[in-house]
Image (cartoon, rainbow, N blue to C red; front, side, top):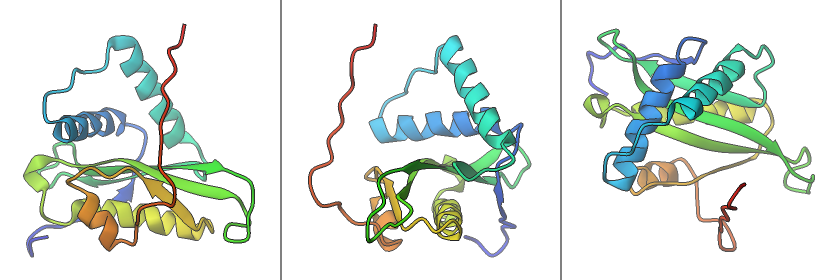
Length: 167
């Protein structure tokens, strides 16, 4: 961060949905190395609706989104989204609650100022406040160094994903 930036991490609020989705698109384009197509209208509407429901939820113990406003007052400079899922309790995780971080992105003109670190740290603090010891994410080549500095490491076993073809 530069000494002249007034940076404040805040919890996302209703009305931030479009900017969160815009930054998610910026992140996907950077990760895949080519312009990603925008969401089609039905999926965009569904994503805005889902985000709004999360941001309006008074409990906010299942999802959280932290953001940094652009210094020029024009949208968001950075964002990170966190979700909580439940698994069976274990000795290391008696509650069974686990966190997952995604949608971490800093607008290109604000990169190299520590903004991603700030929003991810806000999520890690949020998880710690809830007593959630395990947090996972998928790192791009751009974020891997940051995540390792924050204590993330490769999991035991091989992470696999299956996408089913839905009717």
